[in-house]
Image (tube, rainbow, N blue to C red; front, side):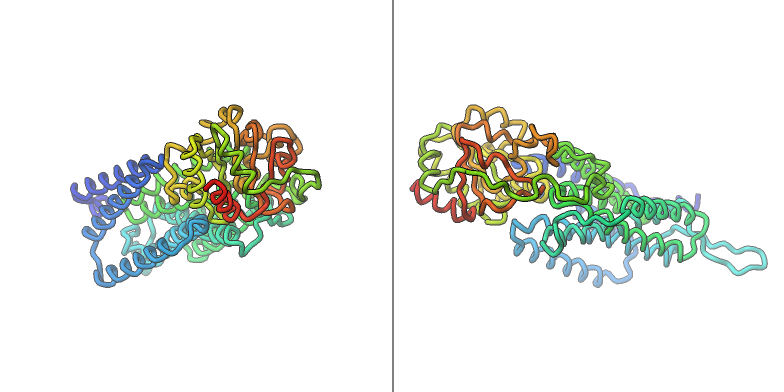
Length: 480
C-alpha cells in the first residue's frame, strides 16, 4: 500500500498523459495518408511536448538547468540533422534514430539497476543479525530485464541496419555457420537469465543479459539481405516501441507505456503487412533471415539477351501521344534524386492532355513509404499517387508504363517462375501496358533481390540506359 501511495499521481497529471496519448493516436492516424501527414506530425509533436512538460513538472529535478541544456543540445542536433539530410538517406536516418531509442532504454535500465531506490522500485530489507540490503521488486526485475534486452537488441540491430543501408556493409546476407542454433541458444539464454534475475539480482546476471542482447541484435540482422531492409526498418521501429514501454513501467510513467505500446504494435502490424507484400514469412524475417540460403539467389547476374534500346526523344514522343501514363518510381529514382525532374516531366505531359498517375509498391525503396516521401518532397499531387492494389488493374488499359529504377517490384517472374526467390511476391503489372519504358543505368546489374528482370527483354519494352535524373531531364527537354 505504501508503495502504491508513493507512486500515486495527481489527477491532472493522468489527464495530461491521457491527452498526450490521444494526440499520439491521432498522429498515427494522420500519418496513414499523405494528405493528413503534416497534421499527424504536428499532433505528435504536441503530444510529446505535453508528455515531456508534465514529466518535468511532477518529478523532482536535481538540476533543471542541466536538463534544459541537454534538451537544447538534442533539439539542435535533431534540427540540423533533419535539415541537412538528403531524402535518399532517410532510411539510414530512421535506423540511426531507432538505435538511439534502444540505447536510451539500456541506459535507463542500467541506472535503475544501479540505484533502484531513486526509481522507487526497491525495498530495504534488514534481516536479524545481518546487514541490511536493497532488494529490487520482482515485477520490476522482469520489466527491467525485458526493457534492457529489447533495447540492446534494438540498438545493435539498428546499427547493423544503418551500416547496410549506408553502404558501409554489404547488403547481401551474411550467413554464419550454425546461425540458427547460435541465435536460438542465445535467445534461450537471455530468457532464462531474465527468469533467474527475478530470484537473484546479482550484477553478473543483469550485465550478462545486456551483453547477450547486444550480441543477438547483431546476429539477427546481419543474415538479412537488402531486399528485406524495409521490413527490418519497420521491425526495429516496433522493437524500439516495446523497449520504451518496458522502461515506462520501470519509471512508473504512463505516457511512456502508452507511447511505447502504440509504436510497438503499429510497427509490428506494418512489418506483417510488408512481409505479406513481399511474400516473406514474418517469423522468418524477425528470426534473422531464417529463410536465407548460402548460395546465390535467383539469377545472380543479368541475362545476355537481345533488348530494345531507346532514347529520350523516343520516350518523349511515345508519352506525349499517350492517353494515360503510369509512372513507377523505385530506389533508382531515389539514388539519382530524380523526383523533381520527374514531377516536371509529369507536369509537361499533363499540359499535353495526358493523364499521369504514379504507382507505388509497398516495399519500393529502403523503408516504408520511401517513394511517397520523395514524391511529396517534389510536390507531386497526392491524388495522382496510388498504391499497388488501387492501380494494378489499370495497367492493361494504359498506353505507357514509365519505370524509373524499380526492378524487383515489376518483375513478372514473381508470378510465373516458381524457382525465383521473389516468386509469390505481389508486383506491379507494368508488362500489361501497351509500351513499357524502363530507365536503368546499365544492363549489367540486377535488382536488390539478385534476380534479372525478364521484362527488359519483352517486345513491348524499351530500355532507356542512363542515369535516371539525366534521362528524365533529357525527356523534359524533348517535351519542351
